[in-house]
Image 1 (tube, rainbow, N blue to C red):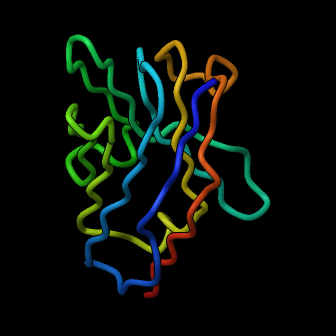
Image 2: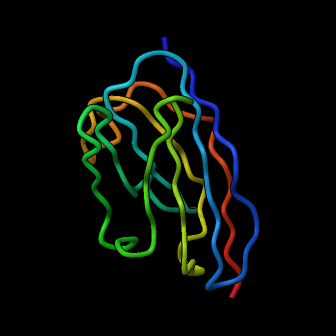
Length: 118
C-alpha cells in the first residue's frame, strides 16, 4: 500500500508559477501528474520513471512544466511556470506503471486545486 500526500497549488495570475509536491510512502516505480478541469476528463500532464529519471510531458505543458524528484524524501514535484488560465484544474499525483494512461496507476493523491486567473 502506497500513500501519496500532495501539497502546493492555489491561485496565481497568468504568467506566474506554482510548485506542487507529492510525498510518497513505500517503494515507487513511476510517478505521474494528471489534472482534471470541470466538465473534462482527467488528462496526463507529466511522468517520471524513478529508476532512470526518464521524464515525459504532455504537449500542452512541455517547456513550461518540469517534473523532478527528491529521492531522499521520496517526493516528486511539479514546477509550473508561465501558467495559463487553461491550466486551471485539480491536479493529482499518482504512482503506478508509468504510462500516460490513468488506468495504469493504482494509488492517487487527494488532489490539489490550481487556479490561474487571466
